[in-house]
Image (cartoon, rainbow over all chains, first blue to last red; front, side, top):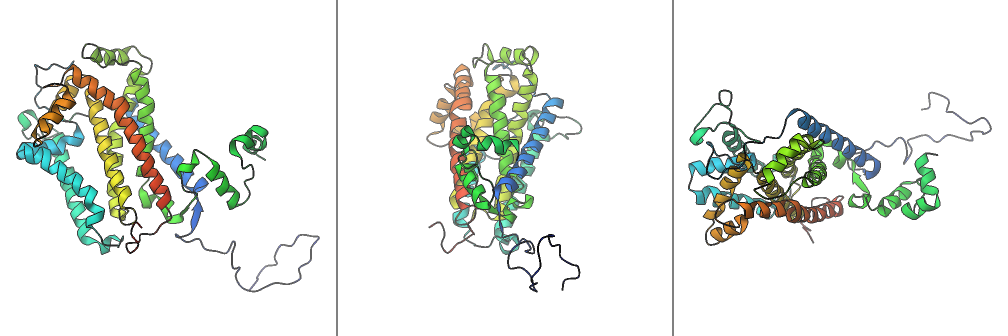
Amino acid sequence: MSDSKPAVPGDQRVLGFVEGTPPVGDRKVPSEEDPVMVWPHLLVRHGVVALAVMVLVLGLALFFDAPLREMANPTLTPNPEKAPWYFAALQELLFRFHPLVAGVLVPGAIIIGLVALPFIDRNPETQQRSRRIAVATFTIFMVVWIILTVIGFAFRGPNWGWVWPWQEWYGEL
Amino acid sequence: MSLMDTIRKSAPGRAIWRTPKRVTDRDRAAAHWGSFLLHIYPVRMRREQISFKWSWFLGVASMVLYGSLIASGVYLMFFYVPSPATAYGDIVFLQTDVAFGQFIRNIHRWSAHLMVLAVAAHMARMFYRGAYKPPREFNWVVGVVLLVLTLLLSFTGYLLPWDQLAYWAVTVGTSMAEFVPFIGSTVGAMLLGGTEVGAQTLLRFYVLHVAVLPSLLVGVITIHLWRWRKDSMLEIDVEVGSE
């Protein structure tokens, strides 16, 4: 088993060797289930994430100024009149459906649906291939929502008409 | 021995940290429990839980962005009076005459947009990992509350520059409240402080933005993180559920 002579301090004698692998210690292969100390293992990662996020924020802040238009004028409605980007999907729905549907029923249903999700989906599996219906439903809703947001944000111009973002740009951040 | 160890072993160091030894895992766990700043973290986690693929670190990214928003927001508050007569001029003054004014305002704006993205992405990642399953159902619900609070914070802040962009975006947003059956017009009037966006609306949105909503968000995050720490070593268990 031992192909090289183990290192022994000079003033000590080796009385014997035991064959096999140690029950604990350096030969143990770490598994994903093994607990590790949060300090330093997780906190170092969080430190790196914090630095990366702040580099991104400071970089954006250096190169892109926050917009500031003319002073608010209640008598002069801009065209198009755009909601903040995270409500762009709702505004796009508002264009297509009655306000009661787009402004009340849909957002209400989304919030109630999200709150109720853990009590509706009682499938204990966490692997995605074992929960196809839940994953498919959530993905469809998410993709539709992202598409509506992008349309409302970048593809809508005066009178909420269709514009191509590479021809005219009306998105506001 | 490092400088930090020397400091820890001095009389004031022992008074602050109480556990000067850092030899075994047990010592380190004791030091962790004894630290106010570290007590929001679990002492140990499973190796898979600290990997990138587990969480994409979107929760901690949201927290970092929230910290950035508080720091930059406090700076902006020094130069801003929430009144239609002064608000816009204050922003112009901030951008042109205040040291780092434009830069700090940019940081606040981009942090806000990124926080909305990060919180939404955190929710999506937690869905795909199945992290809302028992015994973690309640923490998912708390997370939904945090998403709504994040959107409200962003929306109330959107009005404050008092430019055309702010004014009409908030007009569009609040006009939807009118369509809520029975309570819509009352809620709308309470939010706006009148029939349209005006001086009262600006003041109300400001108070919500700098006092009410941030305090609520901190309170709810406290519950969210406390639950996260308590549940961090638990396995998904539908049989036992949340009992």
